[in-house]
Amino acid sequence: MNNRLEVLDSLRGLAALVVVIYHFTYRYYYIYPQETKLIFSFYEGKYGVQAFFIISGFVIFMTLNRVERPIDFIMSRFARLYPVFWFCMLLTFTIVFLLGLEGRERTITEMIINLTMIPSVFNTPYVDGVYWTLLYELKFYFWIFVIFSIGQLKNINIIILTYIIIAFIVHFTEYDSFFINILYKLFIFDTLPYFLSGILFYQIYFYKRDKFVYLTLFLCFLYCHLTNHYNNGLISLTLIYLLFLFFSFRKLNWLSNKFFIYLGTISYSLYLIHQNIGYIILNNLYLLNLQPLISFSITLFLVILIATLITYFIEKPSITFFKKLFKSNEFLIQKLSN
Image 1 (cartoon, helix red, strand yellow):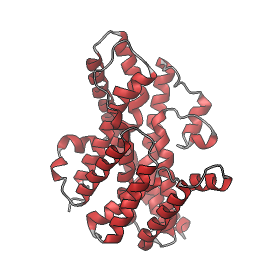
Image 2 (cartoon, rainbow, N blue to C red):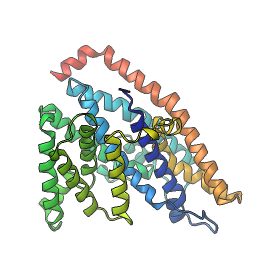
Image 3 (cartoon, one colour):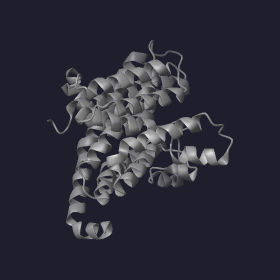
Image 4 (cartoon, rainbow, N blue to C red):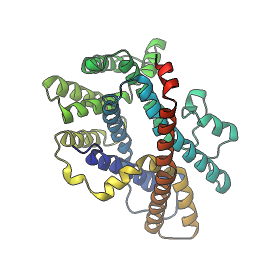
């Protein structure tokens, strides 16, 4: 079996692409109205974020089934997320600082706090709005790390079912209670069911296709629909879940092509740098009176090019560097894990 799961890479690439298209065809014009704009708008592309969450659940559960110690999981996630994030965040901050982007400028102090990846915890705005999802990623990592550390991955399905039942109870409870609000934030009921769906899709893909898994997955889908407030939510979420169900049944091999796999390879860097930098490019292209479709095409090409350079010259080398660093300090890591 292909360890890289090329179809999953293709899904990741597709998710990244639709998020980028959403920002460049809908969100940009909402924030920066233009006299002329594209004749099409891909609002539904925002659901690429939910697809990312599902993919993350799948990948993280796969990662946990390959590591032996909790500390290994922490190290692998740090190497994967933080170094390239720091570079992309600093690059975005610098470009916005030099070229300007109305409503998106940040101070040096705010930039430094953004290095944590969770500035909203400190009531600080993000350097780039797309970073909001990273806090939810880290929260998911925290809870799955706790489950892994106490040796309860074997009971993950019971844990998921219990969680989703509690989520339904909280959903139908008024949020004016301090306790309910704390519970809601602590257990991230607004996004965690997507990650958990990814774990269930992982089981369907690899080994487990019993009624319990399907029932729990359906409850996750139902909860996500009930708590979704976006337009065309039911249709979009249904299509996403059907897409991953077909993937789990290994019926999406046709999606494994070089273009989408390539986008999947650069997807993290593309996601991190496309929005504010893309808006600046679009603003400047409009000043040149280029046609909207030409401006869109040039901007899409440029952000993919920038993401490619970051992936191969920053992201991949930094992952290799930190893996070697962790390996060379194995004795210290063993001490920390004991």
